[in-house]
Image (cartoon, rainbow, N blue to C red; front, top):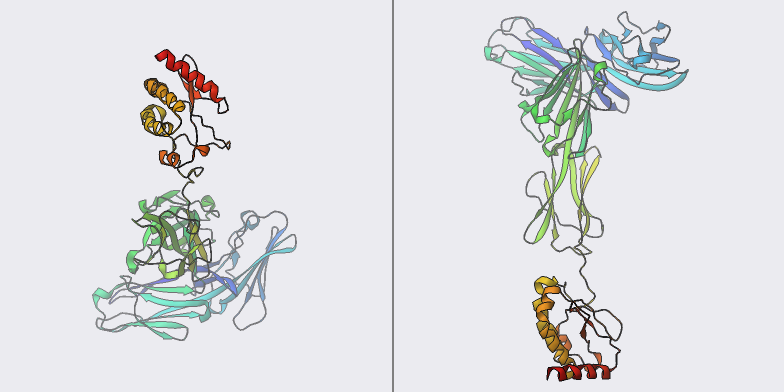
Length: 529
């Protein structure tokens, strides 16, 4: 989170100074950093869930270079005590802390009040949670301090104590452009020679405490939480800077909520954003956002919570990952798209078979592609994973599955899918006739019956049945060339006989005697004669 100090520099007039406080998260030696200025009311945040039973809070303080802690304030549900390090202005933000879970400490600091503060929460006389907060003091000064004559040199100075509490201090011009800085112990100085009336405006001092920014990665359309400072506030503002943007002036307000007026303002560009985060109780003044991002919704989000005249801020840098598939004439192209590249350390493609090495290519920044040959095989099918690794070690993965084509019928090398009997019955005749003409003349007589009944067959269909000496089932739509090349002993016979009134033909019993066939055929021929 960043701390901002605004200086309104008015040429040939006095200087107005406005300051605001801020919090941050995550350092090995402390959990929060609060930056403020001498004489400005500040809140040290310590928020938990509402608790039941006997609950107590102990605030302690340790100055820089000192090894021991001093009691600042101790309280339970019945009474409150002040310790040796207590100040007249120190008090709990909420005296009903047991029910609200807000154990925060409020006071007006002096320079000697900088240092570490411990918030120790106990329940039933047992330690429940402890939070360490580092309070840093910012000192801002300008020269000349009174009137600023034209063509004079304006000097803007900022110093933070202890210096170890911050990672960066910058100055911005009224137009938002960073000023060139000279570093010095504990702070920076910026100079503007030959100052003119066009140089007047608000000069902003930005302080970035250590661990001030949350780095996150997510897949598209996956709900995620955008954190706000864990402070009770009057209203909240959420700003967004688009991903991979080099222009410092592209930050826009995308959401605002005033809990006292119950009024909401939301940008149309972020309709998928809501004030429904898991830690959000808007009526009580605690805020967090829920976002289901698209690919271009990454970037820098800054949540600012305002309480009276104080502002607390939390920044989240968000990278988004998405895999898209596109067919080319020769391959399936899988492309990994990712935004907010500033915090991305590495992006790689991998296959579920780890021994298989994939080739990658990049057509533009934020894109990494690999190709899968068309007609995938056992080796090329499976899960393709795009992994994006952030500089903080967080990783997110998107998986695309390539499936094998459906298996074809492989019972006979020469078999094909049977056509519809009504639309293709006429095409059956040449194949059947070719096969039957190779058989003995006795069976050829049956072919004559087929020719005689072809018209009715094409209308009513044929009952498909086929026998084989081995007992295996073959396809009735057999290739005539295969029959011609087969010896008589292994031939496949198709013998049909009328079944009754419907004139539908069925196969003759393979094992009926040849004499019966000869007798039946002779009678048919005699009748015809």
